[in-house]
Structures are given as structure tokens and as C-alpha cells.
Image (cartoon, rainbow, N blue to C red; front, top):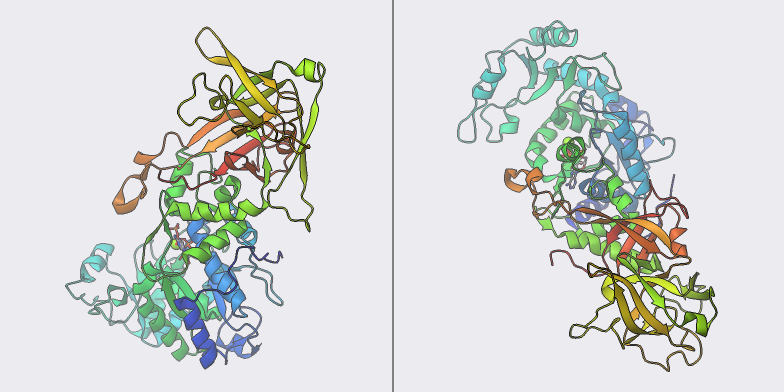
Length: 600
Ligand code: ATP
Ligand code: MG
């Protein structure tokens, strides 16, 4: 299991938030000190046979394996695993796979990868496996029968329509179902018939018997089991009844001895049912007190980003992007392919913090975290993204025809004497690639780069003086001409005796390598692409991807897959995980600009 690296930028002391306060308070009061842990999830009897729980707290990250995780999940992962790490606890990875239809092992594997890649681990003494909620189906069924026996549940056979009408609404109390007064025996028999496939899908549901007049609609006898003939990826056709999420989730937490069950705010109204169920099942002695408690935090809303697996799946299915790991996707695999590092995402989670009210985080906050992380560690390199050829017309006289002058530059800018700074090597020859917009016939005001009569430095090379440019019949510049000024090579004595008005980046024609560079921009034009029921497919940015052919210096062409760079003057780029082949087929993805240009 990978041990999480501490991000260099992590603050020394964590700022407090309401979750830390709750946990610290529980640890201080010993709320969970009496818990036992039998080494695996289980009921009250199982844990009673175990040791006092060595984990001070237990949290969990419970994704439904029905899609790839996104940046919102990254926040939840950082919160849950982060808190467990901080307080001597364990965070469980649990696949919430109680819904038979949507799950897929492809998603299961991608979730495992994502959590590990972010630098977290769910392993604990004696257990390296992630948990699956579907492993608890037997217990859940037992719990359902126990609730019936205690008079807390009944089988309802109203039609869906009748149930909806009789539930009432915010202003109107519900009406009791005619099936609500069934005897325990009748309910048990009926539930068993549901389980044994004697009833059609939708013909009956098991409901908790709470209060049809409750002001909280979630307490108006919520459904806890339904009939659904569907093959489950784990349990196959063993079951034709499946528990509802609101029933399953608290039970999953309790079987795993979770202490702090942290979820997003939309579950706030479910908390009373969570507590109700925990109390009833403790009363029935199926579960051991103290029960887990649910706490809600605000989900991540990020501008220009969609954080709904369903909608992201739609983008993939309709071919609006090239798969879940398209670098424009806010999925963890997409962000990773875009050049995001685990450190940058953890920094982001830290920086946005945990709150109890919904808000929108500006996309530039996420980008800032990546920039901050890469600033110190990404090697520098020169790439020409919009190339035009520059010819040094006096080259043959100053050197000799065909001569290549060896040049080098530090790969990292911040050097002090104690650290060995890696060097990049490249050559200067008679012809080099420069950026097309680094030349102007007539310089606009303030323009300091190439125009006839002006001197600039080829970064890491010589000072040159521009003389003219050639154009083709359509007026497009085909070549810029300049002369090299001898004895001005960077790093040699007296190299600064000739003043250059700017330093421009370049790549030698002789050793530069052609590279595919994928310039990404925001996927949506609207900062809140799906807010208020907007059709997010209507505001896709048609220019979110531009593929260009660039020239890069040898150190970039030979990049390792996934290696991040600062292309000088251009921003941060990553060697594409899938398509880049060092030396042979360099492919780079634009990760983030040098400065915050978002929304400008
Ligand atoms: P989606 O609507 O994208 O499918 P979900 O909440 O249904 O999201 P789950 O797989 O159930 O996805 O989520 C696993 C965990 O991640 C949950 O605890 C959930 O609260 C959390 N989570 C999901 N989306 C966000 C978000 N945008 N911000 C923070 N946490 C999130
Ligand atoms: Mg969900």
C-alpha cells in the first residue's frame, strides 16, 4: 500500500472545521471508547467477541460503483481518509452496491485506483480489502424481519400511485395505509413471499412504521425493501428483493463500526431516519451501541464543472468528450491525465475546507493548487507552439557550416548551492524555430521582441539582431532573418555586454522534435453549466480542444509518460499517459497556464 506523501505545501497545522471539532469532542468524552472490533464487519454478537477497537475513529468513503469518481468525490475522499489519518483512525472504502442495476467491476477498479492514487489507504491490521455493501444483504434481511417482529415494519401493497397520494406533502399530513395494521405473522409471511419471488416487481414494499403525520416526510413510513428481479454483480440472482439506500446505508455503517458517517447536505433530512433505525436495531440487540452518527457537509460545486456521475456518463455516451479520462473531464482519471497531481488535489481539498452551507468554488482555485504544486517541481523546457523558422544568416561565417553549438540550462529555476540542479542540453544551429508572434515588421507600441534592427536573446543561447523576414505570395511569413552577435553566449564572460531587449524561447531545427500538443480549455461556456435544470449539453465550449503541432527541445521529447513540465512562457504541460512515446511520438496535454487567466 502506498504511504501518502506529505505535500510540500501542506500547512503546518490544520485549520479547524466543524468535523474536527465533533471528532475531538467525541475523543475527549470517550463517546466511542467502549466499542469493540472483531476484525471484520458484523452484528452486535460478532463485535462483542472482538477486541477493544484499536481504531480511535472509523470513517468511510462509500461510492456507488456506477461511474468514475470526480473532483467532488476527491473532496470527500480527502475529508474521510484525511480525518481518519489525523485522529488515529481507519477509513473504510466501501462499495455501496445495493442497487443491482448500475454497478460494474470496471468502476470498482477505477475507484480503487483513484483512492490509492490520491495517496490514501484503507488497509488495517488483518484486512486489506475494500468492503461491499452487498455482503451485508443477509444481515439487512434479518434486520427487516426483526423490525417486523418488534412491530416497526409492515408490508404495504398499495399501488405506487396510492402510496404517493397517501404520503401527503409539506402542508398535508399523510394517510395511514390500510395494510399498516397487519399482524406480525402476516407481515413476516408476506415479506418471505416477497423474498421467495412469489410477488411481482412493484407489487409490495416493506415499510418502516413510524409516523404518517411527521413533518419530516422521510419519516412517513419510508420504504425499506422493494421487489426487483435484477441480477446483482456480487450476489447474482440470490435476491429478488433489495434494500432501499436509506435503510441499507446506516446498517452498513453500523456493521463496520463506523463512528462518524460523513455525507453531503442532501442527506440532512434522512438523519432522523438514520437515528431511528439505529435505535430500533440496537433495541432488537442486532447492533451494538454506541451507534454511528451522520454528519453533513456541503458538496463541492465548482464553476464550469459538472459533478454528477450521471451527467458525466452522458457526456461520454454521447461522444462529447473522448471517454471518462478525457483531460477536460472533472473525473479523477481525467484530472490525472490533464496533469493534476495527488498533492494538488489534496491541497485543493484542504484549501476549500469543510462547510455546512452550499457555495460555488471558482475553478481558478483548483488551477491555483496545481500551479502551486508544479511551480517547485516541474522541469522547465522550451517548446514552440506556433512555429516559424528563424535563420541566422551569418552562422557559417561566425562558426562553420553545419556547426551546432551546445547549450544548457537548469531544469529547475530555484537552485541553491546545496542542491544539485539537473541540466537540460540542447543545441543552437543556423536554423531555429521561434513563435510566429515573436516577430513583427513594424513593432506595436511596447513590443520588445523581433523586428528589423532589434536585438533579443535566444534564451540560453546568443543575442541576435533581427534583419528582415521573407513572405510567401499570400503575405504569410515563411522565415525570419537575423544575425548572431558573437561572444554573447549565455553563461560566458561578457555575454551581457550587448543589451537585448527581451529573451525569446526557441527550439533548434537540428535537435527539436515535432510534438502533438493538445490545448485544452474549459468544457463549458456557462460557469454553472447545469444549475437550475439548465441543459448542460447546450453550452459546451466548441473550442475546448485544439490540437497543434509544436516543436520541443530534446529533454521534452524524451519525457517520461505522465511527466509534468513548465513550457517556458506557455504554462504547464504533461506527457500524455496514453499516447506519448518518449522520443518517438511526443504528445503533451496543456494542464494549466502560468498565471490565473480564468474568466479573463
Ligand atoms: P453522483 O451524483 O455524482 O453520482 P453521488 O453522491 O451519488 O454522486 P456516490 O458514489 O454515492 O456518488 O458518492 C460517494 C461519496 O462521495 C458520498 O459520500 C457523497 O456524499 C460524496 N460526494 C459525491 N459528490 C460529491 C461532491 N460534489 N462533493 C463532495 N462530496 C461528494
Ligand atoms: Mg449516490
